Length: 390
Ligand code: NDP
Image 1: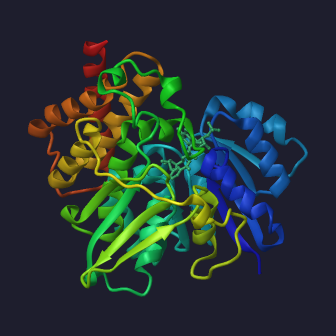
Image 2: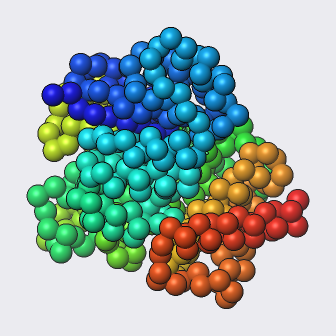
C-alpha cells in the first residue's frame, strides 16, 4: 500500500530534496499535502507533478495565484495559517517538517496528533518548545525522527545503544562563511557574504545562521531536547570539511562517528526509510582521496551564539522560545541591512537579559499559549532593541 506523505516547507531546500527522493519512487507514495510560502509557482508545479490532495501557501494574499496555477489539476488550493493546520490535521504516515522558523511549530504539533512519523528538519520547533513536542508525540504514539544531519548522525550512532552509556555527544560545525575572517571584519559582513556557505547548499536563513553559529547554538539545544542529554555533555567541534557530522562518546571510551557527504538527502532518506536502510543517490566518500580531516575547538569570542545557547539551556523553561524569536527578528533586521552581522548576537543577548526578570522566562510551564505569549514578547523586545541600535 502506498505510504501517505505530507511535506511542510516543500518549496525550500529540505523540501525540494525530500521531493527529489520521493519522485524517484513515485508509486510508493500518496501525497497528501504540500505547503510553501511565496514560491507559489514551484508549489503548484510539484503539487501537479506529484498529484497532491492539497497545496497550501502560508500567505493568504497568494491564494488567487495558487488557484490559477492549479486550475484543472484536481489539486485543492488553500492559504493561510489555518489552512496549514488543516493540512497538518489530514492523516499521513510520514510528514516532513521543513518550514523555516518558529512558524513550523504549530503544524508539527497538529501532525503529531494523528500518530505516524514526523521527520523534523525544523529545529526551531524543538528549540522553542521541545517539551511540548515530545509530550505530544508521547501522548499520541507518534515518532519524531531527526533530519538535521548532526542529529541524524547522533541518532544513527545511538541505534542499539543505551542512553545511560553515553558520556558525551559531539556535533560538528563547519565554521560557516566567516570562519577565517579577522574578528574586526565581522562587524561589516554583508547578508550576501553571509549567505555563502563553504560546504552546504541550504536556504538563506540557515546559511546566515551557520555563519553566526546561531544554527549550531540551536542544534546544541536541539540535542538536549531530542536525546535528553545533559548540556554539559554536549560539545561543538569545528570541522571545516563537514564530513563527520556527529560523534557519540560512550563510557568505555569508544567514539562512534557518523561520516557522510554534505548532502541532506542522506538524513532525509534515512528518516524516510527508517528503520530500514535503502540505497540513496548520494556520493560515496573516498577517504583515501580526501586524505585528512581537521578539527578544532570553537572560539566563543567569534561566535557568542554558542555561549548564549548554554545560557538558554541553563535557564530552561521558555528561554528557548525567547531565544528563537529574538534570533529571528535579529536575522530579519540583518537581512534588511538594519543592523550589522555582529549586532545579531547582541540583540538576542539583550532580549534575554530584559526578559529574564519580568516575564517568567525560566518558568517550567510550557503550553502553546505560554509559548505564543513569550514569542510575542520577545519579538517586541528584540524590535525595540533593534530600533535603538539602528
Ligand atoms: P528554506 O528557506 O529553503 O525553505 C523554507 C520553507 O518554509 C519554504 O518552503 C518556504 O516557502 C516556507 N516558509 C517560509 N516562511 C514561511 C511561513 N511563515 N510559514 C510557512 N512556511 C514558510 O529553508 P531550508 O529548507 O533551508 O530549512 C528548513 C528548515 O530545515 C529550517 O528549520 C532549517 O533550520 C532546517 N534545516 C535545513 C537544512 C538544509 O540543508 N537546508 C539542514 C538542516 C536543517 P517559500 O520558499 O515558498 O517562501
